[in-house]
Image (tube, rainbow, N blue to C red):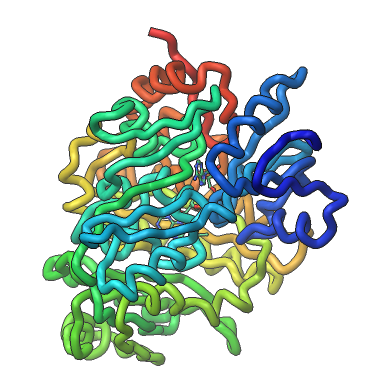
Length: 462
Ligand SMILES: Cc1cc2nc3c(=O)[nH]c(=O)nc-3n(C[C@H](O)[C@H](O)[C@H](O)COP(=O)(O)OP(=O)(O)OC[C@H]3O[C@@H](n4cnc5c(N)ncnc54)[C@H](O)[C@@H]3O)c2cc1C
């Protein structure tokens, strides 16, 4: 490995701070001590690393890191090689502004820096520090999804370094099976070093902020939501958080709105009126208007800066905001966060984005499973190592409950959400009916399972 001639950097535990910094992830629980961290400077740096790792006996484990936001350890390796794409983060807008080329190690914040200046928009993450790579390969649900679909619905082409070292372009016309698989199949088919996305007219000004309610109002809030949804348009969405904010750490409900194309903030006022002037009144009402996604993606910076970094996330899909389902989760969350101060930073998030646009794409058109659904996430946050396992158990038990109860209430089992899995989930439950085709594509592009982290797809030879 030391003799590999590459233009990028190879870090080892002897590299000091640079190595330590390269192991850092959004969650401290996601970091593992790699033997080598390779930071490619050009796409051609990657094939020699793959050749080296696969020629060893036994082959050395390879992990790929995009933005490092996933709360699993998929983008890290204990004793193996991490291909860390952080130096491949260039973003280039096409001259006609109709498309944008993004390298595989960019954060969504890097993209929004460019789209903000150019006054265009793209379907990306609500938060700047989420990586374009993992987000997109898992489908990618963002604030613009109700208007323009998921990130993969806006993908025009991708450049992929395959397990055998070839560097190929995938699109509807080139390597179409690969293009189908990377749109929702995760990092199981190669290192995506470049994405080309469709752009859209600007989504700003964007109103966002917080409406917060004491936990005693939970039943009233849950009763308002089904009515509110009836008049919701693709331009407005919210995330609802169950959390215990300082200084009193009492159970609270936070509604975090995003209202697109809201020139003077008046639509946000009108649309969220049922949460202000009806049965409930917020104890905190702070909704303002920012110019674009760049500013909106930094809205949570202050609160996240003080959140415990031992973070375990699990999430799943659900069919509707059934009050019975959400109340059961509320009760569980209240009870869990009362057990100890160490875990009271744990939160539950529910995303209310109109799902019609995402679901209008046929389920077999890309690897991403489709039907009208919403997604939720459980964030287990602990201040000590001793309480990490309790947080992991809590996140797992809640998503299992949501999946089961949602199936009972809706008559449909939706399975798991790849971007919020931990790795032990059954691939059939993640990919649904698309799993068989994914297995065949895996056999074509990665028969020896060089990409063996994540929800691993078992190759199926025809
Ligand atoms: C705070 C927070 C908020 C989130 N909000 C949303 C949301 O609103 N909508 C949503 O859909 N998801 C959301 N997610 C989930 C997020 O999309 C996933 O965690 C995603 O995997 C992160 O991408 P990353 O590149 O930062 O991850 P990493 O940890 O770097 O990688 C995750 C996986 O993708 C693979 N991968 C990453 N880049 C590449 C690449 N270029 N080529 C090949 N494989 C690659 C890695 O090998 C790994 O398996 C959120 C996550 C967090 C932590």
